Image (cartoon, rainbow, N blue to C red; front, side, top):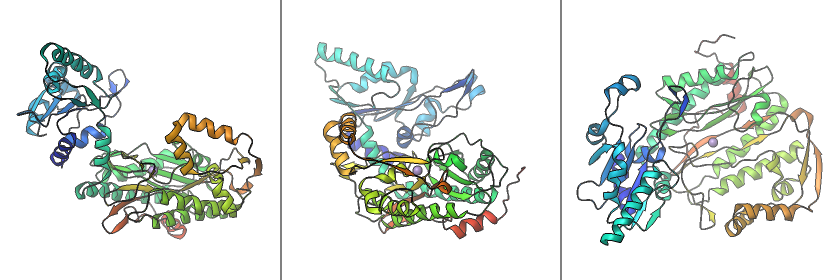
Length: 479
Ligand SMILES: [Mn+2]
């Protein structure tokens, strides 16, 4: 798998040379480090998980087309921190043509820069100093001896992003394992959660299932958000004591083979939706179901979001959350006061995976191998009983065109200026809906036959969710 990716990458960079750095560890305190995870681009090409490594790809080189710079074997450090592959392992186990200690990067990089017009390096990444020093030295050689040295620095990230966007069968297999494991964790969370528990206890039950099903790491920090916390989109404190009558929004998933799933479910802590919770849930559920149906080969990705915004606008109007008809709610983007994020993002090695969303100014068509989330939501801020709406047309394509023409900052201030004189309407939020936050998220893989919902096994319908909540958990709990 890694060799196939390297061969493709080297074909794509042609007669250039590429320097791809891995990540380094970050310190928590004294000699304690934060858990390390290799950067996705680096692990994608190398499979090498140790920190402080750099890969050099030199397709034209007679003997060293793929070189790894790694931490050398070190008995003392290995006693404290664990096994290192070293230069021997980098060649024997990771397929490098040659491997050197990372301390030799500065010296050895120069011979790889020589003879190339272009060097690919992700500017701003680690080891930039060594690359810059190497470039300066090879420039001096060019002046004195007339040898070719790099004249252009190119960003390898767009090439890698396109490769990562289209999952091979083997990659899809890993992603599906991550999804299967994540589904099992969410099922356990629904069974486990009870009033009187802290959010982190539910997190623990879920992560117990992730780990015991073979996932060694979460794909991202779990969001276990009960009651009003569900309205905080990236809430990760997970410390609140849950009460009967709360909804619990869980956005969490396992990583498997470096691929991450991404699932959200929202369910009642006491096992029964109240009438207002049910009303909001049904709106989000219907948006999600319809948006999943919009995942069709050849359709633009934004048609999935368009479906969610349309269905949610209808629901908000019906629930009295907006002072407008469904059509006006959509046209003026008033839904954004309650549904303020996108419906989809690419999924893969990173939970918000690499890949462009738009090509030549328009949303990208769905093709086999693409994977993404479908995750509409409605969040009704408990601290905002009245909402001020600005009555002004909202056109995402026009906004995208403005950003393309003026840049994001200038486009933003132009829009603000245009909206300055637009009428404002103050609207009271129905009291019983305050503090309700609902998101439902599944993971889609486009195949040659169309969309596959990889997380469909996790219940979403109200009766199925309530039934699952009533089952007992196999994870022991102390309340
Ligand atoms: Mn997501």
